[in-house]
Length: 258
Length: 285
Image (tube, rainbow over all chains, first blue to last red; front, side, top):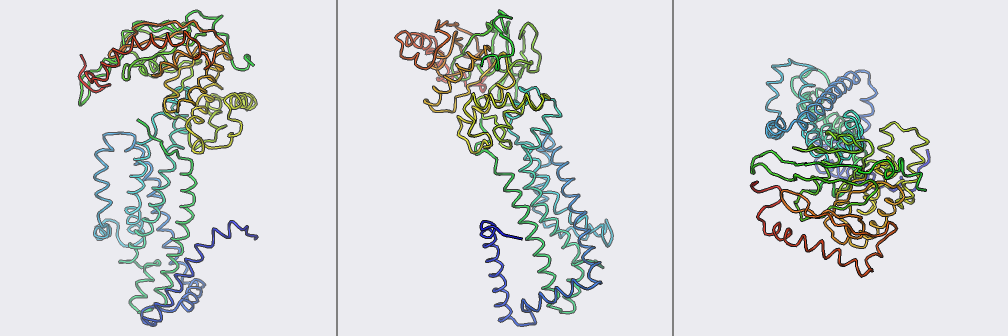
């Protein structure tokens, strides 16, 4: 693969950040010693070894499945609810303060209730992940639908569009950038919720491995899993952010007048 | 060139192109204010092929008049006709509207914006391309075909909106203060382009504006509106030649028309300014 000068330059900053973080990690290791922070090189080697083992895969699969299901509920459910709330003024005005309140509640306090409702295992993790992710998606979608520039809709009527054409060719592209921002935040929070759900009373998954490693004081494994999850979160978020920026590029500075 | 723009020579087909007859528009009471009588009763015969401007103090119902005529708003009483057929709650085929606010779609390039209405109407690709090419050239947007609205100035974006209306070959073009947000020099040039468009399409044009000079320069007739409820005080004929442009302002009799418009409007504008009735806010009579 050949890299152009421009793509090399755009890669420079993330690479510098990565080098900085690894250096910091090494320094922390020097200060704290192996009992708290293992050194980068052996930890990464351990991660590589772990990922290669057959007994690791079911755990990765469990977490991945829980996350994907929670993400699907957050995205699809969030957009559907958001469209309804944004389209119906009264319902939206009633629901918004409730949602904002729920958004600020530390949802971990509700986890015992979730466990009682869904039982131990996959359903509880999925529910907890979706509980975290769905609210920002609903809020962003609702605002996107509410704030659609009325002039676009009037222009659609003046060009004799059918309601279906107005929905597909005006409403969807006009709301997409905002909705995507909501999906991006929903993605991060769904991951957070799913991981949190795995830390307590689970029998499988990366969160379970993490808790087992804490019980065994296996620092190398703790850090290896943390690195794996962080790398996934950072890379996925960077990709989503790049799409987000592309979508927002076309927005006019004074979209709303009068 | 004219044949490529005009679909029907409207002046030969109709005498009265559109008609407002006893039209009123009353907004129902809402929280904070009572019923608002915004317009009329008002009647107007729009002659086929003419350029008619409507001037009046702010909040006098000019935009409501345009909405009713376009079919974007339903009159509370009275009838609206276009080409002999009643207008009822939707924009008739053959009517094009350009708004005061920027209505260009930021997610589409200039050429996709211009082609938007044609594609939704199911026009075939070759004809769409031909019309878009022409409208883009006519409005001076050739170098910006692939640009996005956010990369253009306000005047350029308004050209995109005019081109988007133009490709649909409207026989009646309604413009609601389209140059309101532009600087004076740009307004004059856009006015010249509007006159050229009007001449070459043979369409009927109704322009809402608050600029008296602009109305004078562009129009065959100028409807002067009084405030609240909006109605015509007078309709002033200018008698300017069809082949005119912004250099008309040099003529000695040009100032006389503007002065006449102002003599009508001075009292009305003062009334509006003194806030006896803030626009669509205070108590209705």
